[in-house]
Image 1 (cartoon, one colour):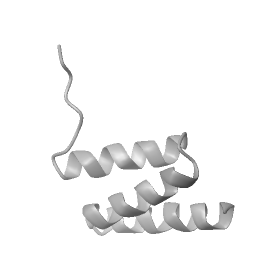
Image 2 (cartoon, helix red, strand yellow):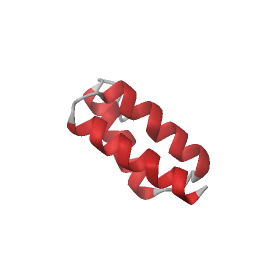
Image 3 (cartoon, rainbow, N blue to C red):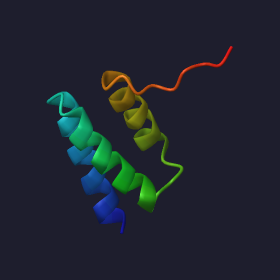
Image 4 (cartoon, helix red, strand yellow):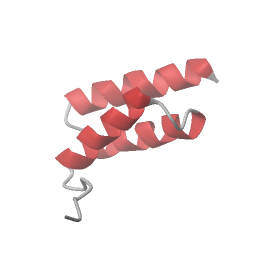
Length: 60
Protein backbone atom coordinates (compact mmCIF):
# COMPACT_ATOMS: atom_id res chain seq x y z
CA UNK A 1 0.00 0.00 0.00
CA UNK A 2 2.76 2.57 0.70
CA UNK A 3 3.98 2.24 -2.89
CA UNK A 4 0.49 3.02 -4.15
CA UNK A 5 0.30 6.04 -1.87
CA UNK A 6 3.57 7.40 -3.25
CA UNK A 7 2.29 6.89 -6.79
CA UNK A 8 -0.88 8.85 -6.04
CA UNK A 9 1.14 11.67 -4.47
CA UNK A 10 3.54 11.91 -7.40
CA UNK A 11 0.84 11.75 -10.06
CA UNK A 12 -1.29 14.31 -8.24
CA UNK A 13 1.70 16.66 -7.99
CA UNK A 14 2.39 16.28 -11.70
CA UNK A 15 -1.24 16.92 -12.57
CA UNK A 16 -1.32 20.02 -10.39
CA UNK A 17 1.73 21.34 -12.26
CA UNK A 18 -0.06 20.67 -15.55
CA UNK A 19 -3.15 22.47 -14.22
CA UNK A 20 -5.20 19.28 -14.48
CA UNK A 21 -6.82 20.04 -11.17
CA UNK A 22 -9.81 17.72 -11.41
CA UNK A 23 -7.60 14.73 -12.24
CA UNK A 24 -5.21 15.70 -9.46
CA UNK A 25 -8.11 15.83 -7.02
CA UNK A 26 -9.08 12.27 -7.94
CA UNK A 27 -5.54 11.05 -7.17
CA UNK A 28 -5.47 13.05 -3.95
CA UNK A 29 -8.74 11.53 -2.76
CA UNK A 30 -7.46 8.04 -3.61
CA UNK A 31 -4.32 8.73 -1.61
CA UNK A 32 -6.35 10.05 1.31
CA UNK A 33 -8.35 6.83 1.29
CA UNK A 34 -5.04 5.05 2.03
CA UNK A 35 -3.70 7.64 4.48
CA UNK A 36 -6.45 10.01 5.69
CA UNK A 37 -4.18 12.24 7.78
CA UNK A 38 -1.50 12.90 5.16
CA UNK A 39 -0.52 16.54 5.55
CA UNK A 40 1.01 16.56 2.08
CA UNK A 41 -2.16 15.28 0.44
CA UNK A 42 -4.39 17.58 2.49
CA UNK A 43 -2.29 20.54 1.38
CA UNK A 44 -2.47 19.41 -2.24
CA UNK A 45 -6.24 18.99 -1.95
CA UNK A 46 -6.57 22.57 -0.72
CA UNK A 47 -4.56 23.82 -3.72
CA UNK A 48 -6.62 21.80 -6.19
CA UNK A 49 -9.90 22.89 -4.63
CA UNK A 50 -8.82 26.53 -4.65
CA UNK A 51 -7.87 26.29 -8.32
CA UNK A 52 -11.26 24.75 -9.08
CA UNK A 53 -13.10 27.35 -7.02
CA UNK A 54 -14.11 24.74 -4.46
CA UNK A 55 -12.17 26.16 -1.53
CA UNK A 56 -13.69 26.01 1.89
CA UNK A 57 -15.20 29.34 2.91
CA UNK A 58 -14.90 30.87 6.33
CA UNK A 59 -18.21 31.24 8.09
CA UNK A 60 -17.33 34.39 10.00
